[in-house]
Image (cartoon, rainbow, N blue to C red; front, side, top):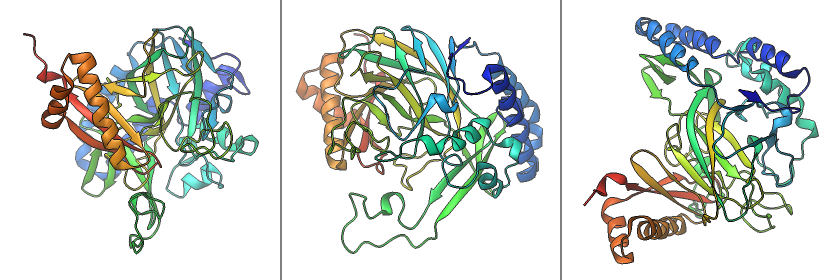
Length: 413
């Protein structure tokens, strides 16, 4: 497995590997710490220890990807998608790459990460070295017009040109630490004064602001969030941000307040902060290419999220992902679409949720005509009787509606 060259930061790959292990980057350490959390939280989970270790061994035997991009300071950006940035890696169509990502929660606040996470009981050795290194690099990073996400990339796909499609196969996703953070507040998420559904007279939610520190562990062979006493949420990790470099951003477009700077908050035709929880391992995302090399970015890692992301955050938890990048020449797309084993997934994005739904329906009709051979009237009918339309996220300026077209309804004649 190759690693990116010249982008490792001080000390080289060897010292970086050692530092990563020292700071809790190795999966075995995470499993041990997760087991400790289980023992403290629920004695009944002790019997699952053998299953946990066996599952970790199976993961360790998975084939190594062709390349690895660590989330070192030189390999990440903060809150935007630069078009002209030097690639951190160049790959050929069909190559696989492991990409490490950092959650902004614990890495971007004013307080030192060890002290900040320490208030929740995180030991210094359980703070990723990449988090510490990124935090130290903050002062040299531009902030105007940017959002808060830490994003790894870009990756250059050799031969990609405008008018092509980049296929992103999501092969595997792994938690890097056994904890994450979800934030709530009286005016967070859909209760914010800037939320499009807010009208005069609406008040805040009567709750205090809280950062919910949530540990995760493996129980009965599956990772879960230990949300509260008697409440376990199965993890379903995914990357909130999967993007190519956008067209030249113009002031006035969603998330663009500085010429040439596309904030990472709103998703758009380039993908970005889609927050579609169904883009987990085994799914595939298709993105239009706007620039030579496509320039692929990944970030905003989530351990689990409900449709809507209504508080404004999921469980924000650092992940590592394995991806296969496949180039399709002369296959233009208007915007992102996806699929998994059971459904084709069409996507509508707009500042207005009603418009996003309308766009998702229109995209579904176009897809059913082009890919399934239906007439437009048949396609609209099928969209109404067999397709589920869901709010993927509604809290990131532009809002996302997903259309789930079941593959099982199409049978061989």
